[in-house]
Image (tube, rainbow, N blue to C red; front, top):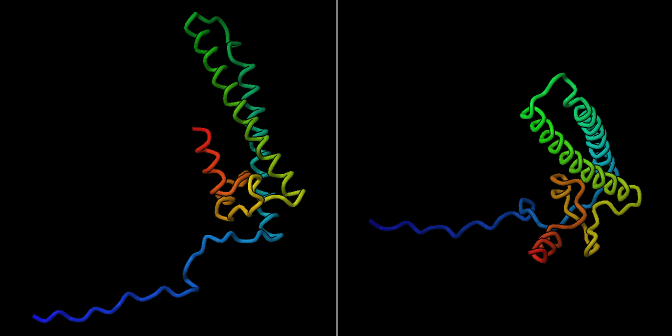
Length: 141
């Protein structure tokens, strides 16, 4: 059997090729990120307030044995840890909102290059482009 001549692979159309070039953030995108960050900020404030109220209420429901007291202490510790994580997240959100105000949102703090739109979609509080973030993480190791 004769083998049919295979055609060379077709080159991709330039329009369909995805480049790594970051997209420019327009006013609509900035407004969308601002709304997203403000919504998350509001939600975190509600969560922090609710956790604070829950930690106050722990242990105030009558007589407790030593096991209940230990469980309440552990639960308070977990709530305080979560609370600290929420405070750090609020700080990141506030910094991102400040960058929107100062027109530096989407600009890498390390190289002053643009942070890709895809990265900002995943992590709107990102301060570094992917390359600089990877470089900083390698330096930590």
